[in-house]
Length: 501
Image 1 (cartoon, rainbow, N blue to C red):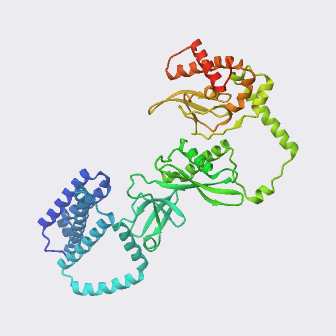
Image 2: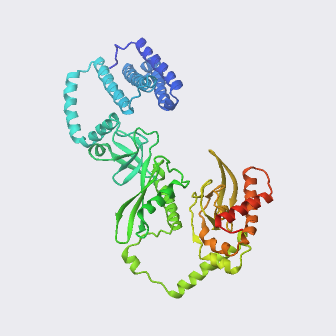
Image 3: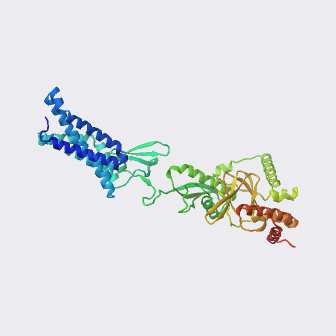
């Protein structure tokens, strides 16, 4: 039966209002153009049906024409309600800086749909009293049969109303850790770092405990990570904590936040090792495992440089066996490798084979992981480095400006001025790849230069040339090593090693 109370003028007004809202939404909400276009297409079909009313009546009779008119009137009301709710929730409230939850918009739309249905039925002459009585019984039966589904729907509503979860939050739910990509009526979708989507029922989230990663008030979701390492008890715990902290603080590791700074703690003491943890703040939870791996690499290199052994269980240490001949052969190979490195260093070109042999025993293995700061400009350190494997970058620092002035490869040496004169480092050197190096300190070289004071004269010439080369790079101009440079460096070498004139 046609709704005779709904005049054509009112139908046209409803269509005009819906069309106006649709045009405004297309201009103001580009992200919602798809849903707006679909509503406008449906509105256009209703307009065609309304225009074709008389034609349908003449060809098929009045009853089919009435049905088409009724359907068109229902659909126009639904389109108008949908466009109105979109405009109110996504344009008006956003302009007033009162954005509402999408679920609230859906609830309001559904309520208006139901209300429009009752209005339409009342206008069609349907007895709503009997309909409500019948629908109440049906509703009770459906509610009992769908209590789990209703629990999930209400759970999703509560989660969004109290802002417990938001799209984009990083969460840990049981064994899954990932980012929330959707909060729907029935479930919440969590995308893990393995590109797996975990579907968690909203009812479960309301009843159980979950973890939201990062503080809500922080602009960046920082996540404190714990990297554990066991270190032999022969190393003093205070020194171990210092080395572990510097290994992370002084390295250039992506996504490791500088503030709060990383720290190290001693967690447990066993008969053979101390259990330590390095705690740092991660900027992006999606890169936890790769960043942990980089931190471990820097830790291993730092412990090796400081002659601190990784802790092993008692049974593992007790069962270690080795062959004496094998150990001797390994020591001979390592000694030959170190001697070859010394022979390539220009600074030691005037040394005899015996003197180089004596220096071999003073070389200390010093590995670095990519990103480690090998030496810092202005620091005072009485040793030099010999690069065996890998590459390093040389930087000149002036305030916050870092200028790249060179690259070092296998066979290179740096820090010789600090070992020979005690002057602060003239540049910063960082490992661009994993680096294998040896370190030689002042004490290892003192015996040789005191036995042959004339070496100071020859070495000072090499040092003055290296100083001029560094100065030329930092000042972007060529400066030859002057005799004044040589005399000044020679004097500092003699004073540093306590040589007589």
